[in-house]
Amino acid sequence: AVSLRDPAARYWCKNLLEAGAAATLGLYWVDGTRYLLGGALFAFANVCFGASIVFYNSFLGDISSESERDLTSSRGWALGYLGGGLLLAANLYIVSQAQSLGLSVGHAVRVCLLSAGLWWAVFTLAPMLALQRREPVRRLSRGTSLLTAGFRQLRQTIRSARSYPQTLLFLVSYLLYNDGIQSVISLSSSFGQEELGLPIPTLTSVILLVQFVAIFGSLLFGRLAMALGTKAALILSLVAWTTILAYAFLLLKDEAGFYVLGAAVAVVLGGSQALSRSAYSRMIPPGQESEYFSLYEVGERGTSWLGPLLFGLALQLTGSYRIAIVSLVLFFALGLLLLTRVRFEQAFEEARLAR
Image 1 (cartoon, one colour):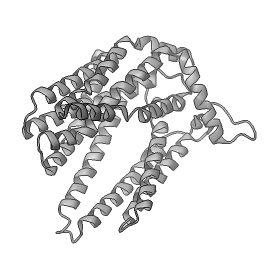
Image 2 (cartoon, one colour):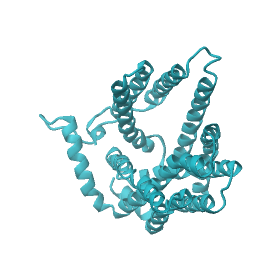
Image 3 (spheres, rainbow, N blue to C red):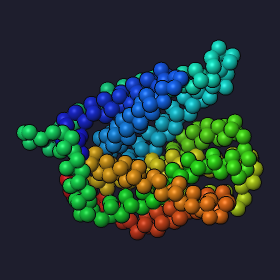
Image 4 (cartoon, helix red, strand yellow):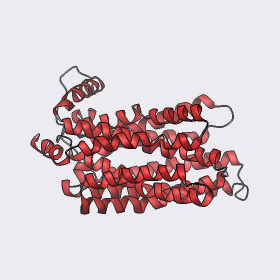
């Protein structure tokens, strides 16, 4: 909502990204018992990242035409996984070879945090230089603060979203299946360690595998969207997620199977994320991208506790990690059910008519 009022939205994005990068760099100097400082820097970096992503996603419509949206979003996710994978590989090397590099493990971890902050800062510059200055859709009335206007506009966006029922239905569907996706990603390591007894090095190598295989998964689903349509490709990805959980429940027995699981997750992970973003961007009334992407982000973060809660309840009641992991199918099933009811072309047309 703030970017609608600010003629230089890219500078808001840039400033938030730079502030987050600076906070991450600051973690290098957190040692000993400086827990409060570390916690504050970590929290601040996360807030900056979350806020900047609203602006970042809203620029998708500025850098690609409607017909190119799926492919552009997929390429963006693919490059993100490539960059994240390269940095993760470098950091794993630093930590594993800390002694030979003359570092303690603690110092090596701090060097990794320093490298993450530098990486964040450097790769903030290129897109910010390329993005064009936006003209404000609405200007502030005299005496009104930008922050106050932003929150007021966010409330208005929630009310106005009712005028776009297909967009709203898609958003609810996304929040459900994305919660399933995020829960699988965050809880898979616990499943591998507790249910299969896998060592930390194996879990770490699977995480690295996911980063690089997800590059090809993102690009694959971008092509599938062009061939089958965005809705069909998204439905296919959710069916694949459900199949993956069924595999984990019924067939996953050993380390080799966990690598298969990781590769399968990677293929659909980037694709489902990229196509969700591109589809939503085409359902948004022009000029209101940041407003609606703020709902996208706030909703995602506001519901992120549901998956871990269901997983924890299932584990508590049954004592089985297999039942706990397969319980997450509920989010994919509900999300898929709602997704099949979304009329994508109608949503796209309603957004176009709002020009």
